[in-house]
Length: 128
Image (cartoon, rainbow, N blue to C red; front, side, top):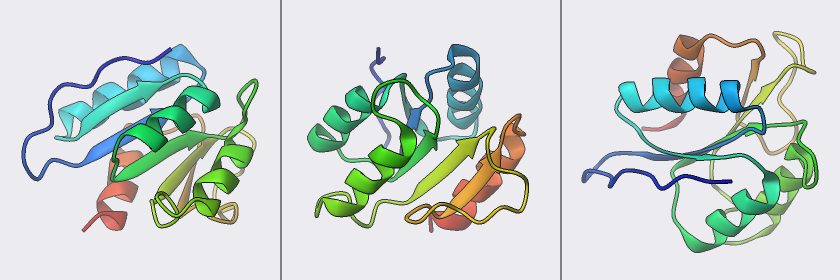
């Protein structure tokens, strides 16, 4: 299930938030909106893949554990495709400990439960 993003302002960064847990997705999406980003929430890997093929994003926030197309598999596909190969990905995960190395292809890991401020800080470090 996906929602339509509000129209992005010129220069506004577009972020795809992919997490099957409604509360986590809503928290991340709302905090990112309040921080000035254009956000499109998405609840599953297959829908995220379709969106990534159809639209341009500046960054993806990705949960690792999702039913169907999981986060690690989606990350691998993102890295294999020319259109998305260089797209920055931040992983949100309850299965990785603080300080754990990012999975191959991810720029950062934010452990769950997460601080929205930490997520925004990580995004601002990655996006110029």
